[in-house]
View 1 (cartoon, protein in one colour):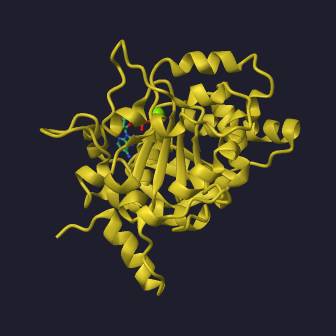
View 2: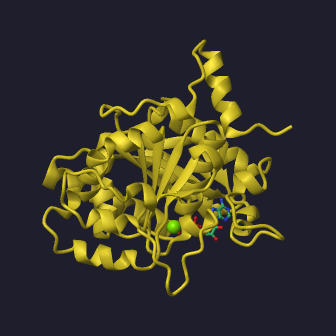
Length: 310
Ligand SMILES: Nc1ncnc2c1ncn2[C@@H]1O[C@H](COP(=O)(O)OP(=O)(O)O)[C@@H](O)[C@H]1O
Ligand SMILES: [Mg+2]
């Protein structure tokens, strides 16, 4: 017997002695609040940022939360991991760059049509990316107040997003591009970004530069954005890993998530599983060590980002 996200959601409502809401009868109001937004950030690529973002999103959906993933990386790895093929030359999808280009307060009429359904019932939806997102990123370099465009996108669509989702997960590109900065600035609502690090020298330096980037944002815009740091690809037998762990505890101890994600070969199989479509590890190998860690991280984020079943 397998439980669906919808079963899990019903169990949660019953456990609180609340009536289980019928999705078709959700009343349309203008007052729905924007749900918590989890923005993943890291200046270095290949650390597992996309793997964490997508597995956290899928885990939360499996627990019955309604999740929107925004792929904000032109490499489209999150989209591909969720089974959306974006490499066709005539791929003509609406991506987040099409919304960030606009400086308006009017809700985006084409937002619903940009969203792809990944799980039935609206539990996991995606705004996919493709390589043309890089053009939008470049055009933002010279745009007025480009740093506030993601926040503006969320605020003008907060009613729609608040009715449909319990949390939004944004997978950003490595480095410090205008889109990455705009989502970092928007993360001030949650007070922090979700950062993924590997316990390894160049990653620790990348973490330092992200930390100073957040300080600069604070100095320039007064936005206070902290970090919640998840350690990924941990392997206890390597000396440089142990040394890096000591550094992380000493310098970033108060920001570390309690769960450490182990090095696990199954992550590589997400994009090329045998006889299956690409999918997050928590779906492909739910009882593996990698998935257990992802479920633990997800549970902690429910508390630390204040995610609720609305
Ligand atoms: N815990 C892990 N153990 C082993 N391999 C991992 C782990 N997390 C991620 N990977 C692998 O590392 C590579 C980069 O991961 P990805 O999530 O795309 O990183 P990023 O988004 O930071 O560039 C991928 O091949 C992925 O399968
Ligand atoms: Mg990535």
